[in-house]
Length: 236
Image (tube, rainbow, N blue to C red):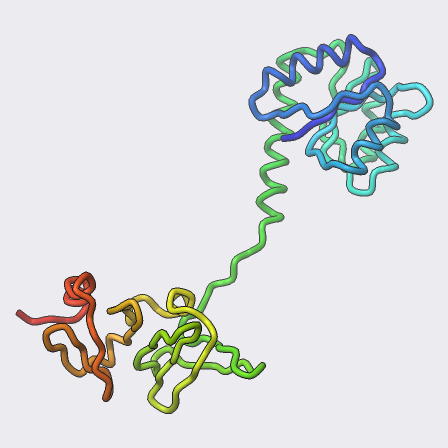
């Protein structure tokens, strides 16, 4: 976690620096003696945690928090224990450390901050929707055309294009074999040659280094033949 220390007392800043440097999960990116300098920093950079003193000249810690649009997690550091009551008014304040700071109490506070950070990071991760490969879409003349994977006989590379040959019609698409292979169900499609992908369910026969798909004779690369034999339901 990237963190800041905001405290007008130099001794307090040094003590907090020492404690932060002992924690592997904390990356101390800045120390400020007043809230305004910290505010300017946060206008340019983001942090995960702030150790914040409450009683500072000109600008209190609570006033500082109110200036932040999206405050990170904040751990209050102060010798005034009564400030802890007001701290409950701020959702961003996750803990309260009374000066002089006890190292064990500091460690517990950091563990709490790390847990909140992990949970927050996990919650912000986009949910990956399950991908269906029963069909895919291709862009042809600014139209998105849906093609059923089961109906594809074979796919042939043709320069910067591929030709998708189905039972009903053929489609010419500006893409690559490797790109289209990512969209196909791997259990029924196999690349037998650098220029051809075939639907294993459409194989009529295999002879020497060729395979017959519908009415097309497709070459099989020597390096691919052994893998192809493993993929088909062969009775020895």
